[in-house]
Amino acid sequence: MSEIRTREVDDLLRVLSALDDEDTIFALLEDLFTIREIRETSQRLAVARLLSAGKSYAAIEEATGASATTIARVSKCLSYGTGGYAAALEVLARAE
Image (cartoon, rainbow, N blue to C red; front, side, top):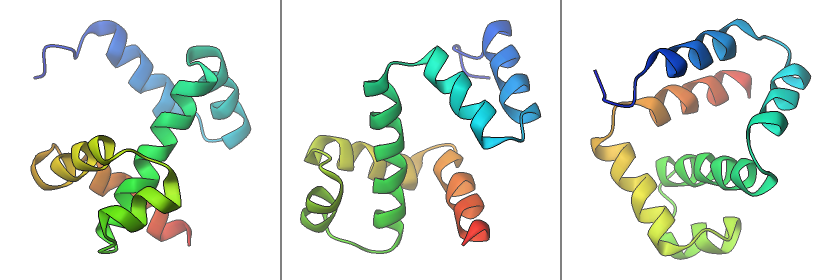
């Protein structure tokens, strides 16, 4: 288990997995994170989606405004991470 996986993190996971209303989840995000953190996190998900679609770094940077460093970090997580992005992308694909 990751060293950041604490009881508090598990509580957050339980809350997020129990919420099923997007407006309630968004309200929680607004309370937990700054606007910048919400934007940066959602930008990373957009980057992951475009990387998985085979887009180039230049195209992704233009479409999302993400830096090459952010794109590279997301790419590394897609290739060598724990599968979180893949699971998120599956959720988005089912919603389309």
